Length: 276
Image 1 (cartoon, rainbow, N blue to C red):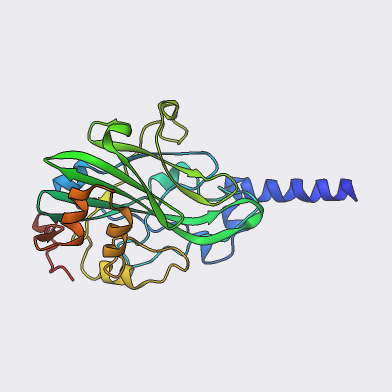
Image 2 (cartoon, rainbow, N blue to C red):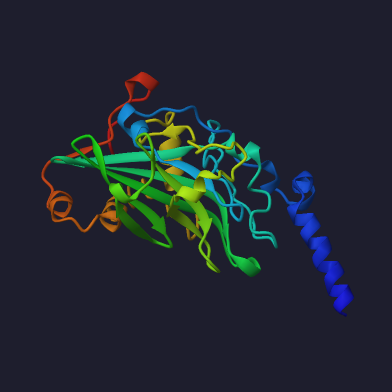
């Protein structure tokens, strides 16, 4: 019995971790892979504060959630290997990040959304689709705080306690112990890069107004199960509040707000619509 169990587990591991058998191992529609990414379209300030990422080896890479043809990612089912079918270099080449900002008085929050095809812990627990978020709080053209999503909440640190590459906070997508995945703040030892590109990675950024016509509404209307997109109209204010630093100056500006400005219109990309 023990020998049979060993053989079965060995076969399953081979099947679900071998990159060459994605099409054979995955039923339709998952064998299609992520959508082709949209071309980058974001204003300079949202690009300026966009985080750079590394990814521990026990998790997926973020990918595009929607393609120019309107196809939304089908996600991936859970398998016996946590990063199975979602951690190839080609996944990094098919990625986008989605951003939105809100400014009040002298403060701005820049919220960045990352889509992953699944979020799997040990023993096939987890869910298809994962959205994780990083918020950068800026005042006087300086990052003051950084907030990282983890299991429906945010961890917030002063920017002085966060590692940066230029103006870009260093974040790591990792498996949180026996639980599912979340963002954590980068450490010095994380400069030993684990992703396929060998660099702190930045995906092409799509701002709130950076979607081709109709695609933002289509993406925002899609249901991703347990995962939620923070920049989506129905969720944005909630995520802003969840990520708020415990700083009386920031709280005063964002909880009692009469000077609000949203993400800029992007005529340079050919898209310019009204904020919903």
